Each structure stands twice: as C-alpha cells, then as structure tokens.
Length: 69
Image: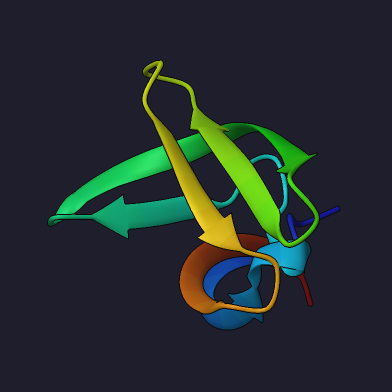
C-alpha cells in the first residue's frame, strides 16, 4: 500500500502546535519534541535540538506538518 502522507505548511495557533511539527526560526527548521502550557496563556515548545520557544496560546504560527491524504 502506498504511503499517503505528505508534508504541508499550515497556520495554527500556539494551542495547535503538535509534537513532530517543524517550525522555522531565523531560517533554521526545528522539529518539535514537546509542547506544554506555561502561565495561563502561553505554550512552551521544546525542539529536538534542546532549544525552546514560548508563544501565546492564541498566537498564529506557521508549521510544516505531515498529513495523511
């Protein structure tokens, strides 16, 4: 059976970031390893390379995501 997954770019809010998403920061792609809530309205996104980014839960951000078609 052929692989029906492909990578696409989607805009989500901080609440919609998923483990495995790829976020480009400063032209460098980072794969999301962990997402957790911090403070009432923030999400801490940890990348596989150990870097982290804190963003608003309702802040839109563009991610690359593998989707099933």
